[in-house]
Image (cartoon, rainbow, N blue to C red):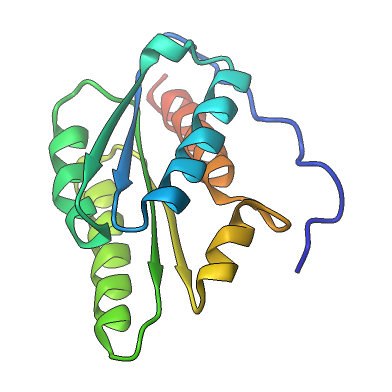
Length: 160
C-alpha cells in the first residue's frame, strides 16, 4: 500500500535535551542505512539536536534485544530506537528471528521502563523492504522515532 500523501508532521519533543540511541541491525546494510537516515532526520525535525542522537550497530536483528537492554539500563537514554530488516528466506529461520526480536525488545521496554521502539522491517521480499525504507511506502525508521517521541513525552508527563 502506497502512502497517500506526504508524511504527517513530526511530533515535537517536550524536552529537547534528552538523548536517544539508534540501535541498528547491520545484516541488510543498505536497508538499515536508509532507516537510519529517516530516523535521524525525523528526530531532528522533532526538535532533538543531532548531537543528542547516538548510534550503535549490531550484527543482526537477533542481537538487538541484548544491546537494547544495555542501552536502556545505562540511564543515558530517554528511548532506544531499534532499526533493521529481516527478509524471509527458504527456511523457518525468519520466524524465529522475528519472534525473538519482537519479544525481546518488548521485554526490554517493560523491564526497564525505557521506550524501545520496533523499527525492524519483517518483509517477505527485498523489494518490500526497499519500499518501507524510504520508498513508495515511506520510511519505517521515521515511524519508529515518532513512536519514541510520543512515548518519551507520555512517560515524562506521567512522572510529573
